[in-house]
Length: 102
Length: 237
Image (cartoon, rainbow over all chains, first blue to last red; front, side, top):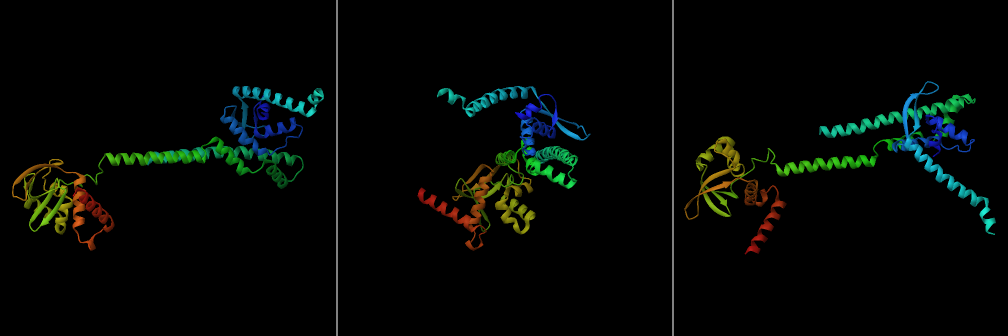
């Protein structure tokens, strides 16, 4: 979901995706960067992203990924369900429902 | 065989192309990460180490990517097994429905042949006859031809490879031969007999069973056949 989100506005190569996730999460989501690639390849196979090779900002050949229409639909669905799930978890963790009941 | 090679080539080519792309992609990532660490002030060696540390096991990740893109080892195994089954099945089908070039001459019109001094007795429909002629060629003509063609092996060839003996004499018109035979009572009979592999196999077995036990080439097989033949004759009795 996060990968698709980073590709929402522009095509990016793998390294750029990891930098974007790291910066957007303010350095919290600092996971093993390599694990991104099998995920990207799986998404490409499912036609959620497409890829092409082009020159990067430092003139090196890199594989760039873009989100597909199918990917956008998928992202929108996942976002909705994530928002609902995280809201539910937040409710439980805040203890508001417990206070109301008592 | 050519088709098999082509399939293998397809697998290898597909794999190598994907592998190259994945390697290039991962190498690019590591280079970028290393460069960023260098900008932050780390030495080249430190930057490389940090980039690899942050990335994880490159080989493992490359293999994972390869499996996502390409055909997995299990799928390959299944495809190879299927192709193998098709080849084996095809070969079995062809070999069972079509006589192979080396097989089609292994035929005989008789179920057994026995040598009794200058006489040749043949078994047809489980009945013994004295052979007189085949397709108008007298027995002596056929035997002379066999001697000319096969020298010291003329008897064996006559019994086991009668098709080739008759072919050498130009006495064949097809797989059916006109045979003149005399019954044990001396009555001359003329029969049209089809030459088959089954009859030839019976002839071969009869010859082998007639050999002294010490000279038998396939003693175990023949003992089994002997045993089953005895049993079946007991049952019939």
